[in-house]
Image (cartoon, rainbow, N blue to C red):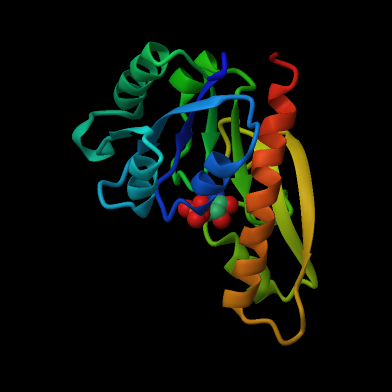
Length: 189
Ligand code: GRF
């Protein structure tokens, strides 16, 4: 049990969720998975780890403010002080940004500011760059624009396929993201 409580927001396969959960000595407890897709594979992973899951459908709310208010109440009830985005495909709005200043972080599969937004790996592959990578950054109101915390380079080989490149990038994410979280939380203790 750690004093620091955190939530992960994720909507996809959940490989980064898993990597965070498996990190020894993460210095926080993951109290909640927030997910906006009822059939996302990450939900099964959360259940395996015994992490509570909040699934919501943004379409049933009139506005982002409406659903973020509900999320905020749940985060506060769980005493969450950090939020880690891991494949959550929505912009975070003012309600959560104001409630968690400099306490929402994201992992992105490119060397930002290059290739922000969706399909960053595909964008880099199509552009023919020799080097791409992974970025951990604070979240602001833009698309992958917040201050950078850490980056790791990943080479693109001449005979690479997008699948092989994706696999290597994800391996780097799975090491970098839990490490960044742990380093940030060192200052909390
Ligand atoms: C990762 O590549 C992450 O960088 C991006 O979304 C992807 C999520 O993958 N933000 P997973 O669901 O963690 O496997």
